[in-house]
Length: 189
Image 1 (spheres, rainbow, N blue to C red):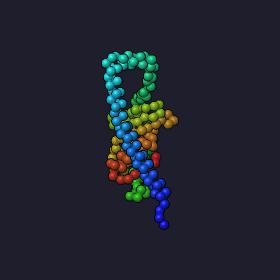
Image 2: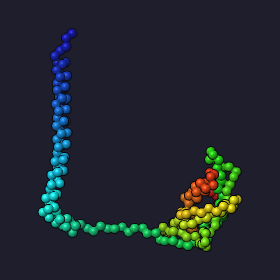
Image 3: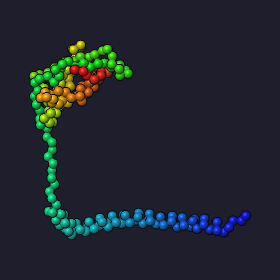
Image 4: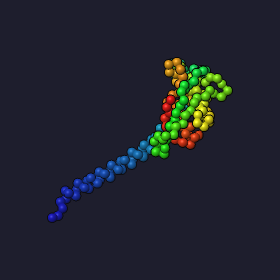
């Protein structure tokens, strides 16, 4: 059975349409690629002409006069340091030692808070009335008599007394782990 001429005509017609569409796309892309740089160059030349004539300076002055002044938000300023006499931690602190799998072992490390070196009070750098950081914090390992110094430990005020936050204890635990070369669990008081 011979092919009908109609069957071939739709294919040729579709092929010609696709070729014309592709040809138009090329011209559109070429037009955009030429028009964008020409517009940019025209804008630049217009800016130079307006700037040399002084019109641009007058427009800037008029806009500046009518524009409202910017409102500057006040920056949050730290309240400043405070001296804290009492201990930040009243009881001894116990850090359980962990094994390689993260399980608690029978080993415990006990620490006692010491006053800062050459000072009778703790200095707390307050960022608000109830939050801040203690500048120097010292712990004594009761078992080995080693003293560990820590800086900038987060503290908060609870019931009128400053105490170390959970984030602060995490910082201390991480520093102790690095210095003692053992894995430690969460502290208990």
